[in-house]
Length: 331
Image 1: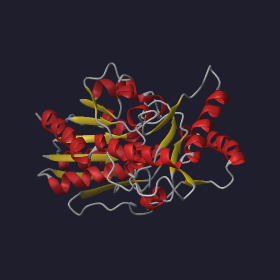
Image 2: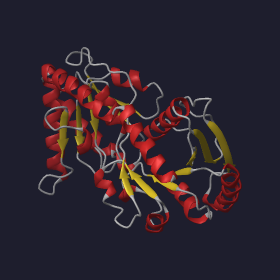
Image 3: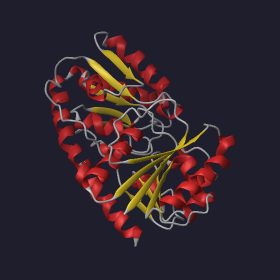
């Protein structure tokens, strides 16, 4: 079976790029399927995560501007007809656009990596529901946002970082945040929260990681992970933090944190508002975070529980779901 992934750009260092490359590498190296990566935009640098030589790489090399979408369509049609894939997988708005308007009628999966309400170019998605053969969401919450789709499947992400839980109850006194600096991640809210925390815990440090390919060292340098997002798909950072044995304090935003964190066992889920107030929610966040700071034994217990719970998102289990879907849609 020939499977083509159509992606706008693969050079970022975010969770989407990391998990997508992990999936393609796995399929190319552990199955009989032929895997093709097709990128749309011209890229000034190479991918930041290693892509297996078994993955075939096709670059449309279109200048990165919506004004060049007609060129993207022309090049996409040319290559997709030549490849004649058994399944195409589209990601993000440009992938959705190509799915809708290229005239390609082969089996199509659209893979969603963020909540529908956080997607750009929302006008595409009503048409996309009717066009795509399958929409794959990361959580049940987001799956309910596509009531008119032909078929919706829920397949979460996985993490492949090495387990590491030793000394989680002791030093270093670092709280870790990782991600892109964008409105959904709500870094200003994190900074407001931290301004309150450091009044009583000046010996602790907040480590903010925007761009790093050495995520293992970033997680290993902390004792607690925090997430203050307004909206998510299924944050890779939470999966990775748990696999690395970090307890988590996170806002219960749509969607993902509630699927990953077992409140009171592997971390704490905080409502986005309490009694309609963000300030009261922030105070609760500060209370839970400082409680973990003050109790190294609880941090260690939660870290161990988090690492065990991360096995729910085992790579083999998740990839078997994908393989089953490919087999069904190719028919």
